[in-house]
Length: 90
Image (tube, rainbow, N blue to C red):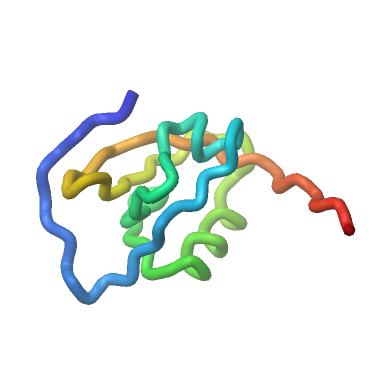
């Protein structure tokens, strides 16, 4: 379970609403659809491209701290990135 803490988010930061795959590493780490990912591996997230780049930098299978904004509160979670699944063509 994550830890809730109080804090402020600077208005100028780009944040993203997480689209959480059922049974995926985000869901297993406690991230919910609609959460705003504000920090990944201890560094601020400035947008989806920033988060995707960081996911590629992190070792697959290693625990990574993630901070999300949920319903006005910061929540510290831990996720374990894993290889992306191949998407079947149509």
